[in-house]
Length: 240
Ligand SMILES: C[S@@+](CC[C@H](N)C(=O)[O-])C[C@H]1O[C@@H](n2cnc3c(N)ncnc32)[C@H](O)[C@@H]1O
Image (tube, rainbow, N blue to C red):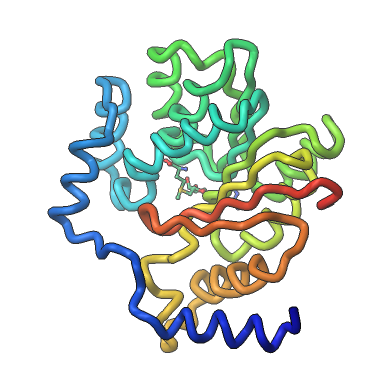
């Protein structure tokens, strides 16, 4: 099909009323009521994190954490890579979804935040499966490539500094096996992607990554309007 015909079809679709339900605070409350499966370890880590400056905004939401756990289970992942640990909530959700011989490598620029998560990981009996790397995510990606070679992870979750997202995506594309999944957080970036006046480096980096991903034939793609936007990129066979 000619590409201008496809562009016209997409253009007509974009102009239509969206068949997407607006998520009011009340509806989000209902969604949580009917879907969240909480427990004291998750709850207490969320509470401790929420008491930190910007803690709640940094941490994935409870429903996103539950989605990440589901994705780990769905993909049958045994090896998971996370960029951006913070206090380890997403780490905890994903690690608990791994099989007993599964392994999760997570990295953060500082050890201050992962140290908070460590106690909760121990309580959840997954601490032994979690390997924390402290330092820039770019250095961790290079080290993991040297240690394990390409295609050594089943799933990667990108949730660190936004300006390097494109580089992290390329690094993960190399480290995750064909058929594996790259999950990228904050791809709607608080709605700022739509604001033409928003020209800060973080918003620009997210916009550019989103535009690039649409054309990247190495992956199958879906952007979920969950939390702050969660992009799923599944690496196609031969997608490296
Ligand atoms: C949004 S938070 C991650 C939240 C975490 N996934 C969770 O659910 O709790 C981003 C984290 O990335 C870390 N970070 C920032 N720049 C980084 C870099 N260059 N390399 C690695 N981590 C970085 C920050 O210290 C912060 O803890």
